[in-house]
Length: 352
Ligand code: PLP
Image 1 (cartoon, protein in one colour):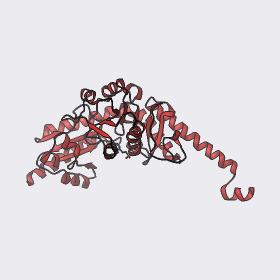
Image 2: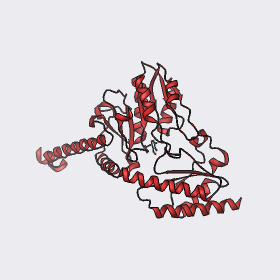
Image 3: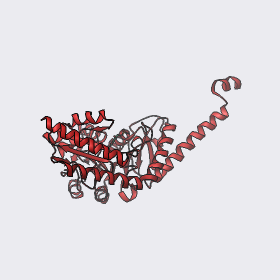
Image 4: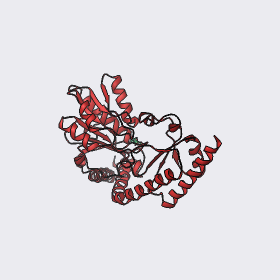
């Protein structure tokens, strides 16, 4: 039996070793990721990405707490992974309360306090918005929720690796992360679940990840994610300072040089890499196409719900352009795009 087994599967001893090595690699990666957010390794649940982490957090807590209450507090500008999880729950008998957002896309701790009822089981508010870059007052909101015994979740996909995150200081019970936003492999992410917090799993199977997420783990992706996380955190201080400076110079230059421009999102409480501008008299689509022709990746939020909710509509929404800075973006790239954007907008405006 032995020769057949070895020929077919390799030496069973080395196979066993490979399994143990993979397991060890996963645990090392878990420890590294936990350290980046001041969590314990056993509080990290690997998922297929930010979307799955959000689904597990929102639906997992809702179903775990169903005996206690069915009210969930969120914002109307969450990423679809949270937004559609909440809509799904609403269709299945849960009650979703939406906090109002101001013109910069911020929610307030006072509104959160006013909305919490004895039936509230979860507050889920994103750390920063992926379209307009606004960073939310998470610590203030979560402190209030914590005082009232309400579980807290934040989608930190946009801030993880870009801004410091300490789950204890933030008073987050759950926090979603994604690897590809920090230059790690796609299709891997994690949910921080504070020790003692219950989530009903979305994946049923052999009970991996302490029963919170069944399925064989994607070892190479997990290892890649942990290396990307370590690198991002190591470079974070320097990189976020560099990008913030570049972002502000870009925004100030463009708004000084031309009229009819609005910055979408909060002027200072925003992601270091996010520039979202609305230009009167153009359509975002044509500018995006023109920028793309010159090798610049930008996007428009012309059909954006987020812009509509913060009161940017009509011409202002149509003419919105989002530029995302990255680790590879240099000062000279930014200057080049600034000059190009200015010329493209001026030319487009002349055509109308
Ligand atoms: N949440 C936010 C704020 C995001 O920006 C994204 C992705 O862009 C996600 C969730 C989804 O993450 P993933 O692409 O890893 O599923």
